[in-house]
Each structure stands twice: as C-alpha cells, then as structure tokens.
Image (cartoon, rainbow, N blue to C red; front, side, top):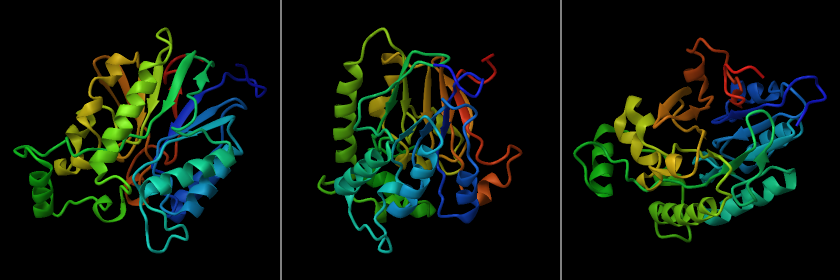
Length: 286
C-alpha cells in the first residue's frame, strides 16, 4: 500500500470524541489524514445522538481511506431527546446499518486486513460491553459492587440509559457478544496477527490508575483477560477511560486513544485530538 501523497500509509486511531461539546466537534472538523491511504480506527463514544454520530462518521469517512468504528456506551444510550428512540440491540443494529450506508466498517462486517507498513495484520473491531466482573476490592457480586458504588456516588449513567433489550441484563448481552466474537477470532488464519479495537480494554490492568476504582465495573470483562495472548495481538486499541497513554502487559501494547471532555483535555500538554499512530508503531521509521 503506497500513498499518492508521497508518504507511507498509517493506521491511526482515536476514541471518545464526544462531539456534543462544541470544542470537540471543532476537533473533528480539523482532523485530517497524513496520507491519502491512512485508515482511522474510531474506538467508540463518538456522540450520544444518532444525528451527531452520523455527522462525525460521515465527516471522517470522507477524508480517510477506511474508517473502522466500534460502539462505546454513549452511542448505546437512549436519551429522551434523541430523535431515534431505539433501545438495546435495535439501537446497535440501526447504527450498524447507518455505518454501512456511510462505508464505515463495523463489528458486524468482515474484519479488514491492513497491508500497509507493519502489516499484514487483521483489524478486528469488537463490540463486547462489560459484565461487572471488574469488582471493587472486597466485593464478590455485582450487587455488592453496585451498593459500594452508590455509597461513593460513582455510578455510571449506563445504569439509567443503556438498555440491553431484548437481553435481560447488560451482562447477559456482554456474554453473548463475547461468545460470538471469540468464535470469530478463533476462526481467523493462524499466521496473521490481530489488532483488536474495542471501546473497553481487553484486560483489567489499565484500570489500576482510576481515581475512582469502583468505576472499573463498567469497563470490561474478565472473560477477555487472555485474548491479547491467545490471538497474536501486537497492539490492542481502546478508549473509555479518558486516560490516553500506552501501557504494556505480557509484552503486548495497549493503546488508550481517547480525547475525552474539554475539562480533561484542556489540562494536558499534548494538543487535543491528536490521532494516535498504531502502525507503524510510534517512534519507528516509516
């Protein structure tokens, strides 16, 4: 894969755009690829209304060679003010169909293969949710964890706006998604590495720095704790925590690529909305 812009193609990533904030919408308006062949991975939480999600993904799809999207929890919220009042699986399905209309790859589509620098590698957009297995210290059940979180005042808005219909619970939806996704990943060619893209990290270690550890309950599942080893993963892309950084676990690179809210990114030394380069790896010659 070569670029007509004179440079090598890049696999880039971003998440947690939250374009309901005017400052964040302006960041999306300014996002551009570095070459004509750059791909962009969007790891969830683009916005909370279907209209805003569509605007952002349409804008980005018109600029990048390929855009790959996975849902965050905010896309799945059903707000009374949203013109599309769908809930649960119906809402997710609606967003997938919208993405297909825009030419954006989703977790329901065949996994594309990146053949640019650092490739070939399968890019696997995932939709897994969470199952409350990242419990606070001293808690052994979801009920205990929620009681503890309510006592601290740190309760995710998902409890009120993210509906699992027709599943009986969010954790049941999560387990179904994990089982289906595990089968797909296990069926990939064994000679190709995989870059998973998920709104939540596949492993719990990124939660070690949370100011409010109880929030980890809404951040993933122990069911994926070994996926970064099982599926030949050179890098795992996620968002959700609003703590953009690179960590390593079992020698695997975990890239948190979120923008976050203006009150968060305005305090950072790095310019907001910087697209993270996944391949070739940051620091490598292109």
